[in-house]
Length: 101
Image 1 (spheres, rainbow, N blue to C red):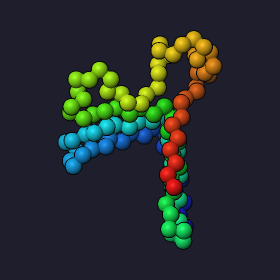
Image 2: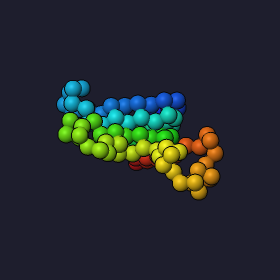
Image 3: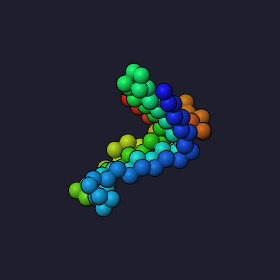
Image 4: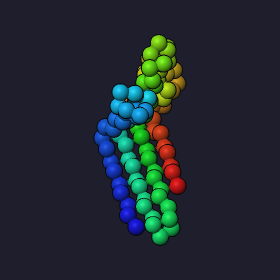
């Protein structure tokens, strides 16, 4: 068995098509926690990912003229309503969780 645990302060990944000249999307987060479990005795691989303040942008050539290229992103303080802002502490962040088993 092998367990791999990553804690990354700033994470940025660009997903591309057949070459790096063909970007599809970019993914960025300010804090990332990734736990991978390789379990050969159970013939399983598991991954648990927590991404804080995740931002995903569409980088496809066909989307360059679109108004909304951001697919996932945190609302800025200007766009959140007063009730939501009152609940958040200044250091709070939104967390995106992904589990693969």
